[in-house]
Image (cartoon, rainbow, N blue to C red):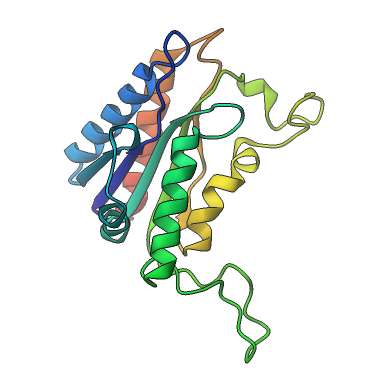
Length: 201
């Protein structure tokens, strides 16, 4: 594993979400992974992209990282458009996905097992207004015990459906009301270092 695609899914909103933290997290990942021998490609969705080039980037990469703010409990709409275009094209061409995995000849084959991205890994890195305490706690009103990974299953399942291994999400929490950016950066570097070390084992 030595090739990484980093996708910046940020969408600009003046005076609300201008993208500096997500840009910083993209740069941290790029620098740390480059220093550890990774070849890095970057896609900034808001700046535009070619669909076929992005499918090729997914085929090229061993590790795919999406860096995104959380807008209304999901990624910005430009990322959903991106994902629809990339995965639909990858299905139509048979490059990322062959089919949904099921077959009439073998009923034991399960839905979601027709992906062709085996051996690749996917990491979703997020910046939240929500505090860490809102997750993994059944006493919390909104998420009722769900984890970040549970809340974002709609994102990560695209990659699992396509055959990639989904890594645990990384989150910067409470970035508007109670930011701890220095600690977030330190934690993210350690998170990436753990992925690098797993590659070496």
